[in-house]
Image (cartoon, rainbow, N blue to C red; front, side):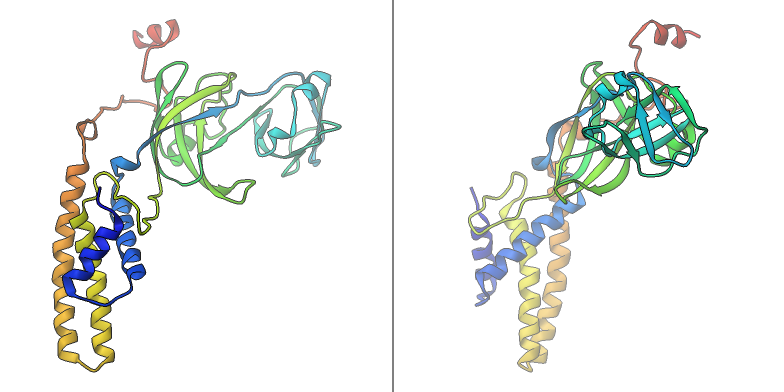
Length: 315
């Protein structure tokens, strides 16, 4: 198997340069990552799983207008824990983010004050609206509900807001998902957030595909599948030619520097053609498949999974 060292040696030998090996390895690594940014390379694709915790609605609670404190009855307190920090509490038609759950008193503190009317014995739901994906997830696709074995359609946040601005459905399995953005987790690492809707009353296992950021290529790293030695070498040559051009300019050899500038520009054109060929060769049969989407509201199920769906499909 070819290594990054082989690519670096071939690059330096092409011009007979005396540039540092460590610098050339950095160029090879940068060219590799440049290709991976353009397309979802198959060697980075992984099958991943995440668990969406079930909605919690045991017991009842009491709220006071203008207060950030929420108290529950004995049944509710037994179901609450500080693991719910960051989840959302729904009272009547409003959603509030939970800032903290006191481990001793089991009192919930909200990020914002409750704006509704004061009430006791109210029903509620606590759900995880935004599911964090693993650290270093660059792309994702193909969500599938593990228990029901149905696809979860990815839509835009604006589309979800159009059809369900108040997110009223709690108790059904999720049928759509949308990316929200990113947030820092408790370890201080940035993770991407996805909202799945409707919210389920049971724990849901979701399988999906993810593409992490490409790994760093070290001196003795083997080249990933789909990354040919000549492609990375031709890309690193561009950086080497630029390096030599700058050196020639500093030495006052303007004509030689101009020649090197023309050479690296021609090299860029050649390398771009090789990159396009690499991307075409990396595609498999499954990448060529296309799927037609059902017309209508995207929250409708794409599959008949129960008697209700069957009757509705015949309506």
